[in-house]
Image (cartoon, rainbow, N blue to C red; front, side, top):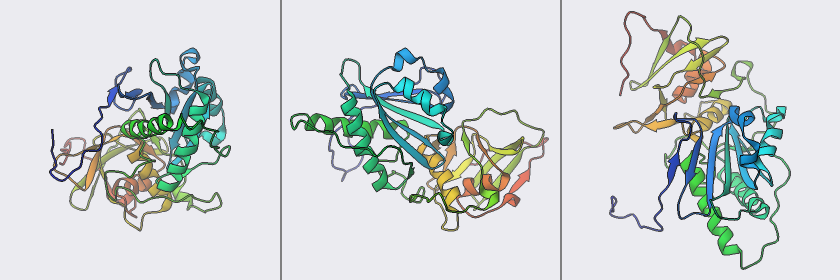
Length: 314
């Protein structure tokens, strides 16, 4: 089947996404019957629930959150992720992606080391996320006869990771969806009102007040305060283009949203996407800036009359 008359076909593939726990942004296993690897994607909050014996295997893994990515390899991914969960320097992590062998394929530690090295280079070249430094990745000694297989595993891994929602290694299909982000020096200063974490896929109790936001005649979002944070609710629009005026930290937050796989296309709209989960942000101003992709403040939010619920704008 051909849908585009001038699009060359390089190699067809079919990806299967299995959600063993249901939900949308919960656990996902991404596979291809023709691939030697499979990808497991899940929220970092589930690391403590991992059944260690089920993931006592060699793997490459990527930990992502707040515009940053940490890439690693291990001989026992279940144990290693548990160690990371106890590391305060990994507090930024919101989602975890694990590449391991497909059923019946012997995925070795050397394969994981190869993926860490090559995908780290790809992530740095892509500059979509800030690559967090760990142990410097190394290229293992390779048998020339194994190189074609490893290159195939690399391409399958990049494709399945992309389908799982991690677009750090390939250009995004949404041109201009978010500006590429260079590595950010630890010494870079951030205004006090821009600090604080973003949490994707929250389930927080709603207070008595709800708010809506309108921007650029087409974008509509709604949200609610939750303690000292403000939640942009599922069903809200997220603008695709990011203005140059947006701060570096808010560009990073928007990049994390696009890479988390929690935005879905809106039929007939090319300038915005729809948020599928609730996202908690440090303040109303930051929530407005992240949704609009612009340097805006909390005045964009207006209280919703509880007696007159708004309709979702398409």
